[in-house]
Image (cartoon, rainbow, N blue to C red; front, top):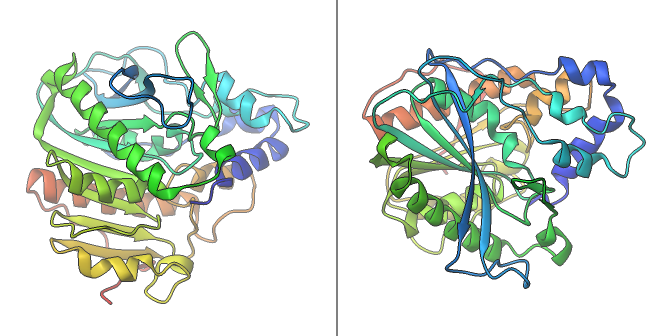
Length: 351
């Protein structure tokens, strides 16, 4: 699950970036036509205790919800709160502990939502990765007409900040990785979030017949399990995550990964073993010269700050990822064919 990867990448960011550099860092512009709004939700599941904190008799989650807005009004949405940036940079000799709060996004905080029911995409980040690392993808989907909910799985992220400033750490990192437990807990988190969104104030904007899930790393494994566990989820995507389905996945499922680990002869053989269990529509691609973090915001953050990164240009990596994900979502949620450029970096696999 590459537990320490988020810590390593963000800490490297801290050691290299000056305040001036951090202020200039920006995520790529969304490719759709619609302005994007962002709401931050604090959800509490009182039906179950927290799986990582024995003192918590309820499961608390933070969720970022991107959506098509009526117009681009309001403050620019922050990338991460100061507490998250400070928690990541605390042990490093960096003058500006708020460096990561300065990343420019393209959504407006609490902008009025456009009317009408829309398909929903639920997203689950990598282990120890904050949900904010999915922002480039989420903003793009929202600009194309989707609602997007990125779930912060409390105690599995480097830091999670709640209303009022309370911030939790990665207890799951301290306790050691148990991928089965992590994935199972995330499935429960996602099902609860779907319940809350469907019945709450956002329910009027969600087309409940059109829901998909995309996950990065261990989030990809959770997506595979959630597609099986919850009939509301009609399609799923695994971004470079090891996964081992316990049964067949009959709904559309896509695999997008880095070639070193996720070609049929790569270092992670879980995709090759799982391939026969994907019995519905399926596609498996790798993107040349990418690494584990090339499919999320770190693809461009590392590049812009002059850090060691994937060989492929970060904006190109995200362009390819966005295009293939948008085509997948359009096809399987909307029944619409969206052509994708023939990228030479992309290889299809059918073992």
